[in-house]
Amino acid sequence: MYKTAILIMSDKGARGERQDLSGKQIKESLGPSYSVEYYKIIPDEKDQIMAEMRYICDQLSPALLLTSGGTGFSSRDVTPDATREVIEKVVPGIPEAIRYYGLQQTPKAMLSRAVAGIRGKTLIINLPGSVRGVRESLAAALPALDHALDILQGMASECGQG
Image 1 (cartoon, rainbow, N blue to C red):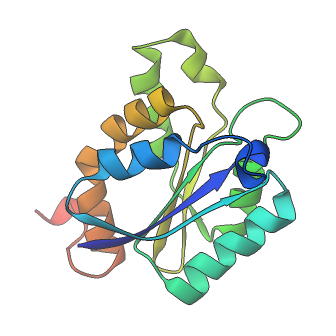
Image 2 (cartoon, rainbow, N blue to C red):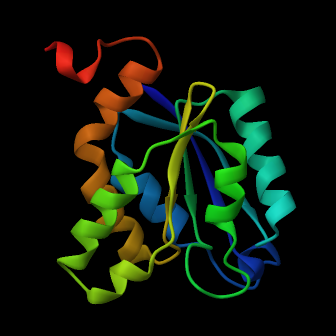
């Protein structure tokens, strides 16, 4: 069972003006191997996003932190920028796979600025803010996620060893 945290970036959601459907979709998509032990909605404020990510990774130490929202082109979309400042190692293959998978569905997938990376023993993956985007992104990432988390947590050998 992988301890998981979900962090939603939404100005309207943080003010209680919009129901969070992407977080619900994340929980549904993950399945029984993932235990969501932390969930929070915060506004699209870079400093607040960075502080929350640091708290989650450094204090709660989940295997996986999934973010949703703030990955586009608008001036309020700062999740990837905040993530880059928090991570210690970049994991470019995950967002590349997500964008590739998404491009099979819509050309708009190329507009995602999402990133993924590691802080401590936590894998952070930025997901889009839409329900469809979350569902498609996790469909692309989940097949390799168990192995990635096992390696990160020290429970599996490197990819090339087996």
